[in-house]
Image 1 (cartoon, helix red, strand yellow):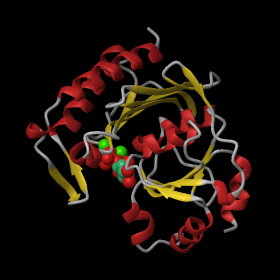
Image 2 (cartoon, rainbow, N blue to C red):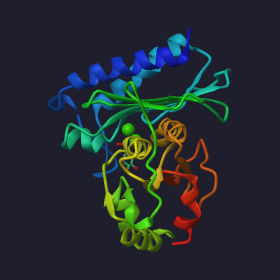
Image 3 (tube, rainbow, N blue to C red):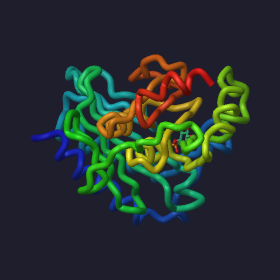
Image 4 (spheres, helix red, strand yellow):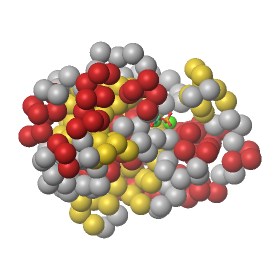
Length: 256
Ligand code: IPD
Ligand code: CA
Ligand code: CA
């Protein structure tokens, strides 16, 4: 069985199910605060993803948002899954939320899938095979002038409103670029950069299940992704993230 083909079926099935889930029955709960929510549907979709992946590949490990990691797996393959990336959008907008599934063998990317659930748009990439939006190949933008760039950043409150060593730099950067957009889903915002509709992305807070699928898509689209200080983005830690339409912009952005 091919992991990628299984993953596409699993993600599309999960998307079909999620589109039918009623908000009235969502049982919205706070996790750490009123800005950090989970619903019954986040848990149900993660259970579905976990069950289907582990039935097909029982040796694989799963790192997901809503449940602890599976222990004692013997294989070297890890799946990073976010059942709903953009839960706040799911609740308030019923759009702009995604199912995110990234698969890695050790530190080698295998493939990433990000399903924009309401638009029924699948972003995907296999290592070495380019990046795709449904059947159309995507590339990052060719924009290089700071004054022409669109910056996308998902959590305004983490990036601008809470104290952080990079806060002043973010404010300077925001003044220099053409515009700032806030979509509310790390996975979808990285795909916006991959598809050339945004040019750079910054967040002070992102988890492996938020970015480890879309980072494969972005890199296959010729983009680049780093920790916010320009170092390597760790695979298994919460991190502040900088993503760019090209690695060539890194020096210029870090010098702001
Ligand atoms: C969140 C979204 C949001 C980002 C948060 C994430 P969730 O994921 O990606 O845009 O700002 O840091 O936690 O909780 O909706 O899966
Ligand atoms: Ca998330
Ligand atoms: Ca989530």
